[in-house]
Length: 75
Image (cartoon, rainbow, N blue to C red; front, side, top):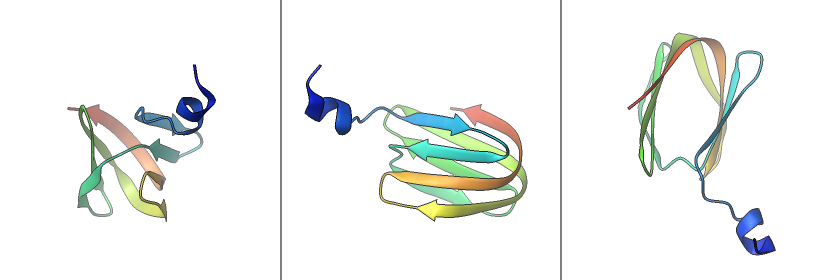
C-alpha cells in the first residue's frame, strides 16, 4: 500500500465511544434535529437516533456527533 493512499483513505468509517460518534468520509447530511441525524456516504446511508444529538465537529469529510445515541441504522 502506498503511503499517499493510507493518508488519504476514502473508506467510510464510524468510531463510537462514550456517546460520541466520529464519522469519517461521509458525503452529506440529509436530515438533522435533536432526535435524528441522517448521513449519506458513497455506498448508502446511516440514521442515528437518540436524544439531545449535537454535531460538535463539522468538517468537509468528518463529523463528530454527541448526545444520547440509542440506535444506528444502516440503509
